[in-house]
Image (cartoon, rainbow, N blue to C red; front, side):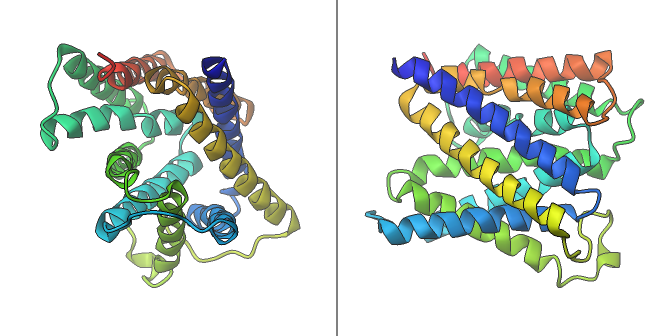
Length: 291
């Protein structure tokens, strides 16, 4: 029964994350991507602070720098992720983001000295082959810097997830999420300090006051993002994590279909092959610690 509920929860999370991408895609032609990130994180920050006030956390603590690292890695990865959505087809942006399990496997090998199995190396090889194919240097408008930002959305998320393993034993889960929302709100504000002509790409732009329709879409974005996180957490807490991690890749297919409905070009054979390789590599990476 628990696994059935977990499977339903992860598919609901995938649908809500796809809805989040749709809202970002609709908002970013008129509003800067960093402003949308700020609004999304501010919504989550207020929600988490309210939850902590209603029920104060009971925790050991003692690792503020690791907590800050989690917030910075996750917050900067979200900046990259929202920027990707604003400039790439929705499915491609999601594929870059879902490389995080592959980078987790790679970082575990390099820094944690995790046991290197054949499955781990195959997962890493498949994942990086997929990245090469979806970047498709000969047939895409994606610049090298844009490609780096795309890849960083997966790297930053991987660093954030690795830090959670250490933090989960010391901090209330809401405090860990709070670090993401707080730093994820501060980073877009800091971009306002540097003149916009100093940036190599149009990643940071001046603030634009949203109109009523855009404000309502921002509220909807915050709502679906929050519930997506709730269902994702529920799925992992009551289900088998490797299986849930594998099923979460359904979001790439949903995002690709949603992107086409919004006007994205239908992915060519190379991009589709790259997505499939990332999915296969990610699922292998998720499963590599099961045995």
